[in-house]
Every structure is written in C-alpha cells, then in structure tokens.
Image (cartoon, rainbow over all chains, first blue to last red; front, side, top):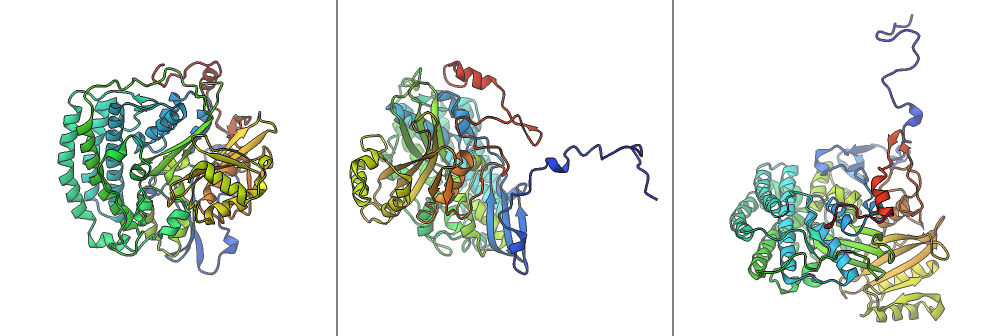
Length: 408
Length: 183
C-alpha cells in the first residue's frame, strides 16, 4: 500500500512546490573535466562560487588526488553584465559609471583609464591641476585597494588582526573620497577632459594628515604580517610564476613585478606627467622562496603603498592653486579619429580600453575593456598544478582578483 | 622601432605585395590588416624576430562590421614588446558567420582566454584551441551577444533577461542618457 499524501489530495499530479521541471534545467555542461577520464584515486571537486575565499563568485573545478591538485579550471561569468554591449547604446560620458563597476574596489583607476582613452581619441589634454588631482585620487585608490588586498590576504591565511587595521585605514581613504565626490565606492569621478568635482576646502590638509598617520600603521601591519613565520610558510614557496610565464601570459601590475620584472607604466610609459615624480618601482626579490611566489606578489603590494604615499605627497605639493577642473570637458563628444587603445596602471595591473568611434554618432561603436584580472586568471591552472588544496586560497589571494573586473 | 618600420619589416618578411595588406603607420596606434591565412606566420615572426621581440599579446578584441563590404568581424590583436617598448596592432577580418582563425595559443599563451572570449561574444572559431568552451556566458546561451544584430531573448530558462526599453530608445533618438555631466 502506498503512503497517503499528507497536504495534497491523492488525485493531485506532480509536486506543486517544484517550479522548474527537469526539461527546463540548463544542460549540465559546465564542467571541463569528465568523470570518465579520471584515473584511480582522482576526483573532481567544486570550489565556489559561494566559497568565501574566492573573493567573489568564482567557481574553480579541481581535479584532485587526495589533497594534491592534478589540474584545475576556473569558471567565471557569474557577474557578467556585458558593459561592452551597453556601451554601444550610450554616449561616451555615460560609459564611465559602467567602468566604475568593473573593478569595484578600484573605481578611480577604471574611470581614469577610460577617460584617458577617450581623450586620446579626441586629442584633448588636461590641465596641470586636473592631472595632479587624478594622480592623487589614483594613488589613494591604489592604497585603498592594496590595503584591501593585504587585509583579506592575511585573513585568508588565518591572520585576523591585520584585516581590522587595514580596513580602518581604507575607511579613511573612502571618507576622503566621499568628501570629494559624494560616493564611497563607485565614484563617476574621472570624466573625459576633467574631473567631476574640485577639491573641497581643507581636503588637501586632511589628505596630508591621513598620509602622516597612515605610514606608522602600515609599518605596524607590515611587522605583524609580512615576516610572520606561519605566513611565510604558507606563501613563500607557493604559486610560483617564473618571469617567462608572466610574460607569456601578459601579466601586469604587481603580479608581473612580483615575478621580478621591473615594469611599471607610470615609469616606462608615463601618462598624466608621472615622469616628473620621484618613486621606485618595486619588484619581487625572492626573499622567502623562489622569485615570483605568492609572498613576493603580496610584498610588492605592501611596498607599493609606501611609494604611493610618496607620490601623493609630491602631487599635493605641486598642486596648482587655481584651475577649473571642468575646463576641458567637452559638451558633445563625436570623435573623428577611428580608434584608440590606451592603458593605465590600475591597482591590479594594466587596465586598457580599446574604443572604436562611430564617426556619425555621439555613441562609441565598440568599447573593449582589457582587464588585468581576467588575464591573470588565465594562468591559474598553470600555477596550481601540483599544489595542495589549501594553497589555492593563498594563490587566489596573491593574484588579487576582483570578479567584477574578470566578468565585466 | 616606429610603426612604419615594424609594418615594413613584417610585410617584407611575409613577402606581402602592395595589394595583399592594408596598414596605417600614421594612426595613433599603427596597425596592419592581414589575410587570415597569414596570421599564424606573422605572429610567430613578430614574436621570434629579435628586432621586433613582441613578447606579450596585450589585448585581443573583436569588432563587428555588418555594414562593411563584405560584412565581417574584425579580430584585433594588440601586441606589445616589454623589452623594445613598441606597439603594433594586427587586424584580421573573418566572415560574420562561421569565421575561423588559427589559434595563437602556441605563440602567446595569453591568447587562450582572449580567444575563448571572442568565440563567446562574437562566434569566431579558433582552430586548434585547447579548450574551446564559452567563457563568460552559460553554455546554452542563445547566440553571440556582441554581434550588432543579436537580439535579446525574452527569457532564458524562464528568467526574464530583456532589459527595459528606456535606455535603448533614448539612445536611438539621440537623447543624452542622463548619467554624464550634462544631463
């Protein structure tokens, strides 16, 4: 005798709370590895997309033998919005908020790269004051972004205190930005030909005060985390990217410099007058383990914050007292030139935009964002091969990815 | 090396006659447009030649030109040399449907994900690619959305996906979209 249905009547067909029936479910083809090809003792393991250490919604498909990773494939696209399609339908200035949402913890760098590209297309140059303000905001953003990377990296590895200290300081940068343009994360600040708001009265003083107070805290966090024995053991010999591989995969930013390649756009292909500033390009030294390890990439970011502080101090000094920050903002953008590609050193690497102009319309024909995190994720399977599952966490954190930028 | 020098050297090496390629050395980013069958050869030369030494494939984009004659998708390769600090832009045109190109994965490994993205969003096939799956969109997503004539599906597995008409209509009529400085 079959058991009676409790809530429904016995004549009811189907299960009413199940809304998706089998034939409506997407086909299960989101796996790169097939169970049929596994050797003995191997298994396929999914990590993410809800895993807290994947820094967003990233799913990694692992082929493991016990704790050892045999192979891995990242699956991305959970945050895909295709801003490139949207950009086909909105005017040039209107794309800027979309670029803000790519790398949402480094928005200043995104809109800066986009604005530089459109300016290259139009042949506009910005005034000295705008250039200084852009450098100040970009470097403060780099500090905020690297603080986030450093704090969460420590937490991924198991150190909680640096996270709190880093976030306190990051909060102060966000406060400065909020005072500057009203937003804390997505600023819409760098416009084509200028910036949206001039610096408020007293902003530079408070910014200088922040720098003075920030450096001792950074020293302290550095002492707490960077040379901690456990931290070095977790990161010093893990996720090695040799320089040749870094070049082959076109890595950029701290990830490239972590592999010992001295390349920084701010020095080697300067924009906004970076050539007049005095700062050092930090590269990985291989102090703990082979060159290009997770620790090297992490430590490049830590040292870069000191350099950013130096740059901001210089920019505050040479900031012209007068100048209209919207002077060169064009009322109507319809470029005559065909196309342009321009890149800038965003906190996570070289962010580039490729824009093809529609010469008849005030709307770009094609906008392509070249995202450094997307490129960095492309070599993920190479550096995880042969590592342990726990090292995956260390490797993801050391690449400092933001999924909003990978998925765009 | 200047853009003109790079273009000249590449054309000489590939023995391309005047009619076989187009190039613009005066553009902001000097570019050269090659026939698709010469792409792999050109890429290998650009990487291995010590004078040129293009060690990174910086960016790879697709651009759809449905109104060109013949209609084509242009695949654009931005190459950069970290040692020589110079740029060149390679362009290749393929047909809008069923376009095929050789993969450059064997020359620059960075091509792997970029080519997957171009397949995903434009529908260009890369022959010999080691992992030719879609990358950003679900495997059963209809069509390739960055084609200019791609149409939104109303729903995807019962999930409404079509955006509101407002933004698109305002753009069509030439109105500002209300997010820039002069809304």
